[in-house]
Image 1 (cartoon, rainbow, N blue to C red):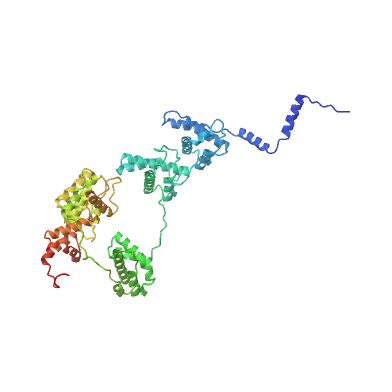
Image 2 (spheres, rainbow, N blue to C red; image 1 turned 135 degrees about the vertical axis):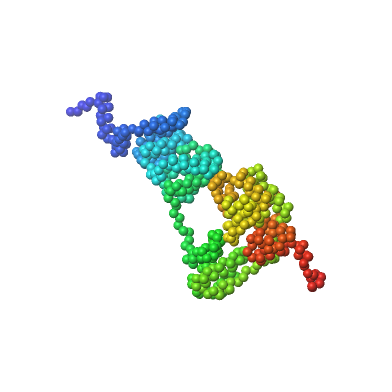
Length: 542
């Protein structure tokens, strides 16, 4: 007997559906479970996007559709990707920018625009400020520090444009450090250089989409370093601990102390002496009691041909002083000082390089008195030309060194470190007074001559005085004259001798401690030398 089955269409459909549910593969079960879990999971908190828009309306006008879309899109993606708000950082934002968008009504092409991603990063910053995203803060009240930094720049005399630039880059640094999760206490030169070179995607409005090569990087670097230095001076962040680059020889450390205490040597001279001594200190040997004359002579004589005559003289000078120091400490034999061979001196072989009085006046008149720079430079050149000052004398000149009542200039910080009073000529005094009353910046600095751009600080070294002379000579187009500040010193001595002054008077004005130093100017007066020259006893020249 054949069994009869019900093959009605309805039964067939029901049976198929039942079999389909029973025969569901293992591959499809997790997908179904995942869809159910997504449906059961709480929806994104779009109230955060609404609060973000309200905060923007407080200082921005106009449509905010892009901001709203970016914030809600980011929240939707976080929800689909199971990423909590507490884990959001710049890496998560980069992942969002690269994801294959399947976020409903949002489009993948939106992720290709920098404006859209900038709104996302701004939304992240908003969440960080509301503590929805926890960020480690090792410096509190950073906004207060930014405001104080702006006021500090104002007190230093920066222009409005410079203050705006520094403040903008400081704010940029704050945002970049927060996005990069770099703590303030870890900021060093390497971190600042990373900030300078980074491809900016920070959620702040910049003047340009692409940083200008050279000037843009320099502006970032100045602003970042200025703000970091400001925070360190306020002890808001600890100073960077720097490891010593080298361990100084203990004997050289003692040599440094001896030069300072017993010889009264300046810091710059100590630096040059130690730099020279470090070249050959190891060649002398570890025990000063075993030093011999052969080793000492070899240090002077066996030098590279590329070293100049002045460098060899420096070796001779420093080696003698170093041996004198060791003998004073009882560590080496005193007679070894005489083993140092003398350096070849040619001080009297050539004439001192000078310029005529007419040329000196042309150089002084090249200053543009309609600008603060020209007024300052003219005062400097007149002090060099009328008093024969060294560049270091002008660089170290203080306001208290000018005795206006007696028209006297007191030099307390010169090369000899002995106070010297010099009469202040009328034209130099007038130029100095014009600079102090009309062109000198209003800064609380004891130095007379300051930079004309903020911050109004003294020159870094005496070499900047030599640079002023070089620029003045270049303006006149005069060729064949030295460009250093000693040009005026040599020219003054030459003019005094040709005007009838004796060597003692010249030495007094130039503040020479030894008459032999002034003797080099004795040969510049050719007319006087011809009058006292004796006839050649060997007959006519061949």
